[in-house]
Picture 1 (tube, rainbow, N blue to C red):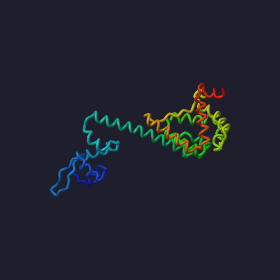
Picture 2: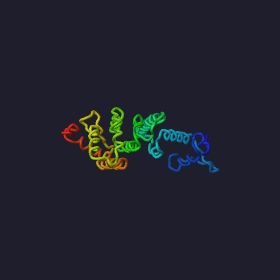
Picture 3: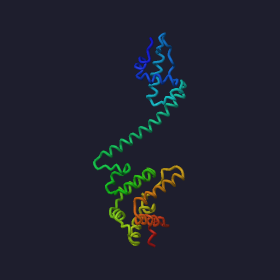
Picture 4: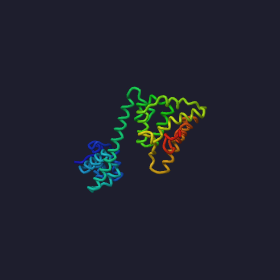
Amino acid sequence: MAWSTREIAELSGTTIKTVRYYHEIGLLDEPDRRSNGYKQYEIRHLTRLLQIKRLTGLGVPLEQVAAMGTDPDGLVSVFRAIDTELEATVERLQNIRRELAVLTRPGAAPDVPAGFHAVAERLRDNDRALLMVYAQLFSDESMQTVQQVLRDRPDDALDEAFRDLPADADEATRQALAERLAPLMDPTATTNPVTLAPKATTPRQSDAARSTAGQALEALYHRAQLDVLRRAYEISSRPGGTGSHGS
């Protein structure tokens, strides 16, 4: 039995255009023609179309379908590579679903990184913006530490003092606030110090990440706040940690 192009397309669940394209790229052999010039497709053409449909449905690119042939080792290698890609895709989609589940809850905050929704209510717009930038630049482990500090060790009075610090705050006010902030930056003064490790894999990328973080800080906080952060870091970096700043 022989079929026309339209019939073979319908039988294989594809389109006439697709069948012709497969001929063009060499995936499907051209059939013999009748005396009137019409193509005569046979069982071998149908089985080939069904094979191509199955492989492309599994995610095999057409160029790989053409190159696969019948080598068992080659087939297994291609399938394993696709399976690895699918595993990563499934994980990504599961993460998206988990995030969407959080964002559909009452009071959810789409303008903070994943995991920070529980503390979002205490954050101001500049804090939220900084966290979004940080989540792009720094490792998941770093952001988890930041999240844990915000969640487990809330200090509303300290937060308010920093956020409401006047741009023209005097020397004594800045220094006193820096000393209160310093323990959060001192790895010897807390079990979960806030350290920011870039996601970058090269020194150049790491430098770019830190530079971008610095630019974000300068854009989101005024000079007095930045001065307090600088002082707090210097205090925490002294020999002996924050415990030595008063000696």
